[in-house]
Image 1 (cartoon, rainbow over the protein chains, first blue to last red):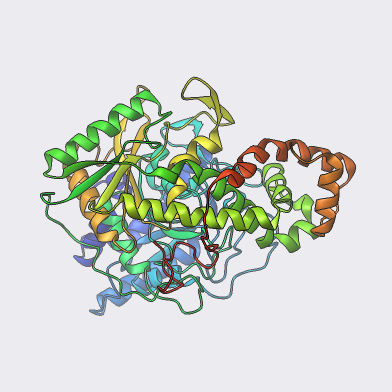
Image 2: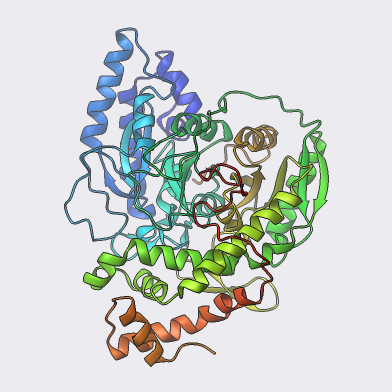
Length: 469
Length: 68
């Protein structure tokens, strides 16, 4: 396998190569570090590349394997981490300037679980400042550029993670998702990103944006890659108040391709309105493909979903302002212009409005619960459009101009508000060759079902394994 | 109707945030764009539903740490 093939290989293949002795962890880590050096001037996916510690860890992984031990399914595999998770010995910048030179003394549990399974942490990826935005046009560390077209945005807030996976400068990367921040960049960059059920993965050691909306999850090259990573990352953490004390089901491995007996709900309202035509046709074709694989398509209507953005926005604004209260009050000049303005507006949201939004949230959850009776997954576009040009604030998808944040939130935020698990995976390309994402949504804690459906679709091979030159 | 610049200054001060008049004007203009979305929440019929703050997506009587 050539060096280029190696850096674009799925995680499960890299893991097998190391386990089988066909490649060492150090060889793969070196290949990845060389790829980072090659791609960073254009893509800018990383805030901190941990070359020395990654090489030390890779050598140690090779030595352990030579002695006959394998730590776990990620033994020796390089993994990158969004720079909002604590990684021991590094500064958790959150994409901002508040942290100064203060280093984390311990790994966040999600990172620690990956390391315990043998992963080598290779670097910390760029993000929208404090995960508060969809573009990863970071004022302090520069914009992450989309590897498919560097004039376009990678999406956000986990833009560095998705761009790195897409261009071969990461094999797998961690992200967070408060309004779509794993799925939006995955859709724009042609990667697979899963936002698990709220409470499935610990957020301890992750800088908060909005406590009742924050999720953590993996971004990878294939469905099986993110399934393996999620199985490793997931688990109860009594020190995260939102963590769910639930057994983690088997998620990794190969599955049956046949979807006979699986019922796919296709929303008749909201999710297919105001969508770029090429995205709409690609997603419709992907849903037809699910039917060809044996799934039964069922039309569903979700009555309260149109209120989601208002409720999400009120909750996000208020909780983010509370999370940043001390720093915003004391050091507002350290924030970038857009995030500072969001936070200041959050301080103005009346308590009554916040509480009303939480009550509306209850209505939305109940509406999804009713709509999903009798279906196993919902299928929707992952984003309303392919990656816009950097600097885009508004765009026209229907007859009227719409703010970019609203066009993204209306598709992805419903599943942060409800906490339901959702995955984005490639299902097409537009006329410019830019990736299109399909979103599959499951019942709470039923990640295995969305992974099964996603894997079956991916294994058809229509859009699997593409990467930018 | 949205907040005036003076309303913004007062509300920010109540929250402990000191804004210059120029900054308050900037925030007021941005907040005016969000106001319709926030006030739209008041038009939604809610019945007696309890706020879902503690992780919201949890039906009454079930564990408070699990979502929908």
